[in-house]
Image (tube, rainbow, N blue to C red; front, side, top):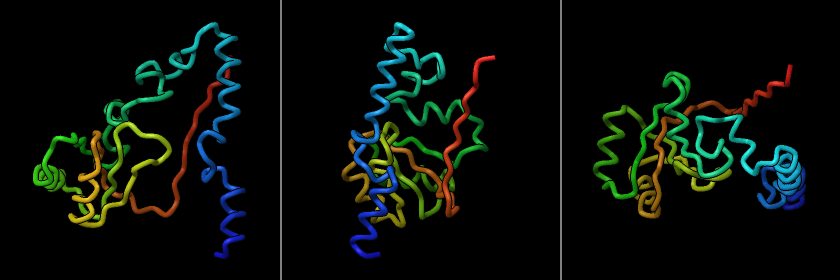
Length: 154
C-alpha cells in the first residue's frame, strides 16, 4: 500500500481518526439530551446494571459477569500485583492457549489490546501493565462485528 493509499484509507475510515475528532458530534448530542432530560446522567437509564451506564470507566469483567459464559471467550481477570508465574498458572488452569488476547479491564478504543503469541510477549505485556488485565482465548475469525440494539418508543 503506497503512502497516498494509506493516507486515503485512514482519511475515509473514521476508526483511524483521533478520538477527539470522532466524538465532536457526540459532545453536542450529549449536551442536547442532557438539557432535554434535565440530567447529565440520562444514559444510565439504558444500562442500569452497568457502572456509569457504560458511558465511561466501566469494567469489562463486570459486564461479562452479567452474560452467560457460553457467549464470550474464556476470560481471566489478572491484577497488576500478580506474578508472571501465577498468571501462567491461571492461564493453564483455564485451558487458554497461545495466541491469546490481553487487554485492560477498563479501556478505551482498543488501547493496550494485544495479541500475545508466547510467554515472552506475555512477560513483556505485564512488565508495563499497571492496571487490571483481562486474558481471553483468541477467537480466530477474520471479521468482527458490533451489534447495537435500539428500541424505539411504542
